[in-house]
Length: 139
Picture 1 (cartoon, rainbow, N blue to C red):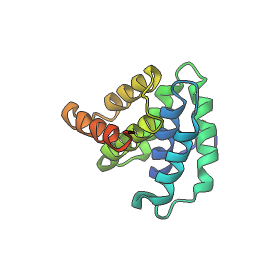
Picture 2 (picture 1 turned 60 degrees about the horizontal axis):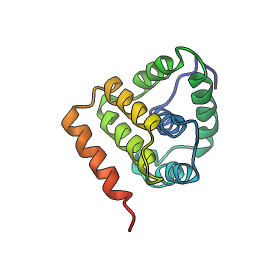
Picture 3 (picture 1 turned 90 degrees about the vertical axis):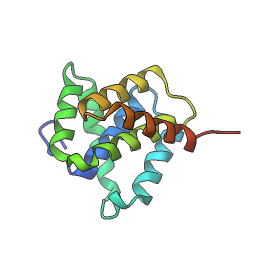
Picture 4 (picture 1 turned 180 degrees about the vertical axis):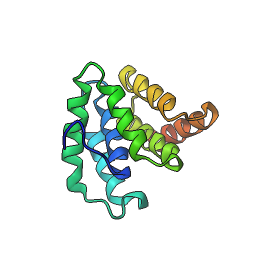
């Protein structure tokens, strides 16, 4: 997959989850496990070939190293993702960010960028974020 590649809607969801995980420059095991679990179990990924995740990850990493790469990534995501899945994309991104028990500053900035780029209503975003926190609480 190269910079001019088009993504499927499922690729776009994976790209966002990977971008959130990489936002703090450390991809944690808990985040990788969460992404894998999401892809293996959620209905939106029912017909997705998980082997696509590696080239999607490579594309994300390549774009994040470029000066305007984040803008290019969001362009690809908006092109591939139907608007009805924007909140799903944000929810999955929040789940990945919360999966290791801490949302880092870099992850928080990435989530803010996703909210802006996908035009997630602030009240809806707060509810999605609270749900992610609640799902990933520990004793």
